[in-house]
Length: 586
Image 1 (cartoon, helix red, strand yellow):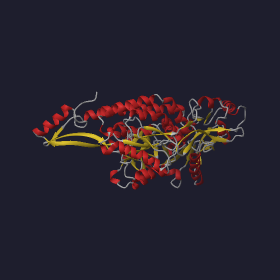
Image 2 (tube, rainbow, N blue to C red; image 1 turned 45 degrees about the vertical axis):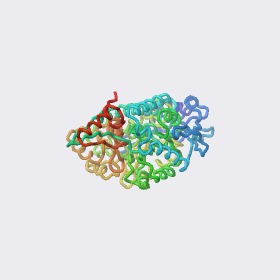
Image 3 (cartoon, rainbow, N blue to C red; image 1 turned 180 degrees about the vertical axis):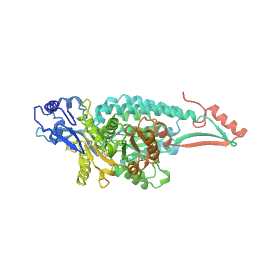
Image 4 (cartoon, rainbow, N blue to C red; image 1 turned 90 degrees about the horizontal axis):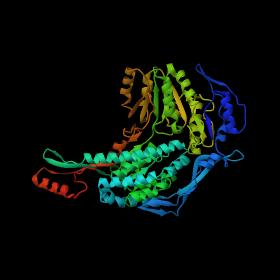
């Protein structure tokens, strides 16, 4: 098992852990770190060699136990067929690296997948356009109960591939095995909840309204062809949070998997093919910077759904030739702050901030990416935070109880190092010994203080294991930080005084879309609205809201006269229409 506590206070425990990691006893320097009047014994500084030894060797027993067979994907799902691919391919390198006899590290190759071009992507797009057929296709006109049956069939096929998909999440993005399994199970729950929400939505719409002499039936209808771009950090859950509601509302989809997290969709190809009519779900592979703008430029994409960068989203919206015809449903950048007031329960605040900052190495849009702490409690909070942080573990993603795992790529490590070096050059300090040490794809988290406006970390979203801390004397300084941010997703507020909480919350709700009281920022429960202000989001994602985002209200109306009533009654009683009906789905 390759696992290492972030810091140790006991020399005996330290030496025992060191023997397990190195296979022999070795004395390490012990010292106390002192800052602003507080002191903690951290045992020793994590070194590059320590991190290197956390990676498995070629003959490691754990590596053999959890390894997967190389997946050489040579198929693409387009127009209801799993077609053979004879074009270019791209190797998939895992975040997990293997340690050679000479101590060198190399990323594990776990397979390859198609790497198409614009021409191949257009085939997928045209298949979706044909399947939608200007709203006259089989899927957009299908009765809602039949769509529900199709989705239930897909869900059964998806459940059957749980073991394969969860292992691939772990190997492709470095998420712990437990978290990978939880992502799969949460996604299954989301699909089930969406099915129930569709049923309820359709039942609510199954009645005529009579207003001012006009009779009307209002239902939600699809928008057209959806281009779905998923993120690497939650490649299954966040992707399906847009793809599933888009499908349930009758849209046809072109899906481009994220750069990291491609192979995990291969086991689901058959489930998609078997559940949905031809052309409803189509995959496109290749360089996103090349193929995605080309797809949008055609004007055939009606909905752009992207979990990613606001810069990318802005560019894509501009290249669409009919901007008013494009609906964008976006989950974008966030720089969520935690505000810790003087009366906060510091033990609870430190615990929640630690979870918020370092869950999946801080690679979450809802992660806490700036800690704003009142000057009166800054020393106590930092002491509490670092004490809790010392109990976290770093190692390989299959290790039981692991907290921190390899980052998805070497490029990500370089990005974290550059942000950290910028802060240090401008006066910040690393509070935890060994913070910022890197070896291969492992990056030892760094708590950075004080972070000031001149530093990139002050405003730039780090999306990784860097924890910037700034202090304030007046709460208006913290509120101004949130108000002047380019992002407006969430805020975490730690305080106990009801009047203080009420006053601050009244200000924050007009700047962000969720204020979390004495707890970390988060997305769930999935029935709650998930969105953001400013450059953080466009549209709302939750079980019910997403269905509305991927549809539009349409109606059939007539004057409330005897001839109109006779016609409508005949349509309903004869069950001639999939739209004009008053039946309920049980």
